[in-house]
Image (cartoon, rainbow, N blue to C red; front, side, top):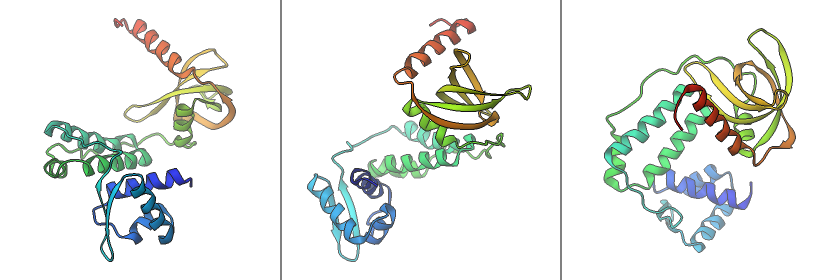
Amino acid sequence: MSRTDRLMRLMDALRRLPAPVTAARLAEETAVSRRQLYRDIATLRAGGALIDGEAGVGYRLTEDPALPPQSFSRLEIEALVLAVGELRQTGDAALEGAGRAALARIIATLPDQQAQQALHTVLRSFRPPPVLEAFRIDTALLRRACWEELALDVAYCDANGQTTEREVWPLGLSYSEHKLMLLVWCCLRQDWRVFHVSRIETASLNGHSFRPRRVPLLRDYAAQYRRNAGVAG
């Protein structure tokens, strides 16, 4: 882990965990030794972070200069908590966990009254997660390929049971009630295609990059979709 990543993880733990946080807990969260943790705390303090510490008690982040104070209306807080709760409907445990972690960091920066409101929201989601089609590939690979504009070699089985191999440029993922769909630019067909992720038999990075084509391709796809749907732009 790089030094920058380690310090960011430490700041995240200080924001997210209930204060005061012991050195042992912070060392565990950041996967470093206690000696390294003390050096990292000193580095953050030298960079301007106000971190109080008391022997035998723990550390408390009293001010984070990298994160300005935040304030939300009561309804905005309700919407955030509800939205994160709805992430379970994607069936993606990693995505749901990321949402919870992000929400915890947001709540940690709120004034006390608003933080209490976030803990006692009126709107909640208790819908059970749907039964999704099984995936043969790691969705984390698809997310990375979209983010970093990396081409994939895939083997895809169509609705007729025919499998073809092709290079695709992954553009985005979308969730429906029981399916996860991947929008791609298909280099074989020279056109957009929407794949059922459950029908992708194999997927691997092939070393090609299509940067900076992703945004223009998405823009053109959205314009074509609006035209076909008869929606004014």
